[in-house]
Image (cartoon, rainbow, N blue to C red; front, side, top):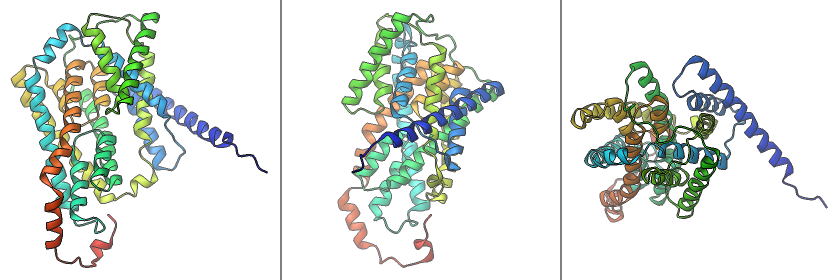
Length: 383
């Protein structure tokens, strides 16, 4: 009798991890020498994505990604001194305004996707297509928006592809735009602790890890980032400075986050509704431009540099935008506060708003009133 063994699959997967790490590290070093913005994240992201699309065996290790998010969150929390906490608290109305802006913009983006692609997927009922375009347009985290879309019966592959592409474009466009423009932010807000203390660092990581674990157990959004961030923020706001996070740890964390973003793109991704992806790419660039205009207008009212608010209101991922703020010294606490509040608000509000806008009963009536579908070439084709 043959004995079943997991050894060979494990070795194969481990080899994929090592190959991906080596590829990402080489890309990061190349970007460092080329003086690109965020070299330790953008280099791995681009190269791993290109490798995945070409069919190379790239892979991301989940626990390593979680550790990377924990590391970045711990470093970001060190910026929230009591003085900075008071500053951020005084911006509550601006944060609320940016949340409303993001919700409205996401709804408009979804409506635009519906207008262009609502007829291209005949296998979906009208309400399912509405759910697909609505949750694909929402400016929220990819995993959470995909889960909500699944509950509504949407095509989750289109929703996940939309958010992955949006985050990729924003992560690439905004750092380069910041570097080329020469904009500067709130450089006067340094972290509370600048020196590395080995014992304090170990305690900080342990406490942040406990926060991430608890958030994961409670099934919160982005648990290893938000849980660790809340712990690090609480310590700093209380005046407890345990240790700074070494730059080497921060670089390694950025590399792992870049890998986790890059592996979302593979050969099957580029074949998933190419017209849909093209529309999302163009729409994302429009979102970035609109958010930049909004940030410029808001900066004149609140007196905060425009570069900081561009990052705070951008339609990117919270970790990626916070890393950009940290590396480019563009007001980490303000950017983090804006992005975290938007993430939570979108997560809490998008599903109730969808149910209010498109109740099942109304959808059923609409379906009955629709004429029978014609078997046209346009309907049969896969976008």
